Length: 114
Image (cartoon, rainbow, N blue to C red):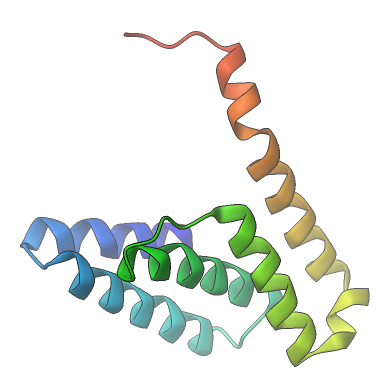
């Protein structure tokens, strides 16, 4: 999902689409992909997070990935409360949460080429 969204976003920006049009078209593509794949919890999580982050940019606000993860959990559990006991749901949110929490501290441990 990330590759599809990022690829579409980059391609639309290179073509010369404006920021808002790029965001809207990218979100449309991401949600179309989510529907076509059957709406698995991990795909809907990624699409909801993309909506939160890109949507923030559309209304001139900074998107926050951890807020997007929390919002995605809320939306999915409001839609299907039984997902809470689904291992795929738990692993998807757990792995994504760990990546978001520990990405910067781990990155800061390793020196970068400047």
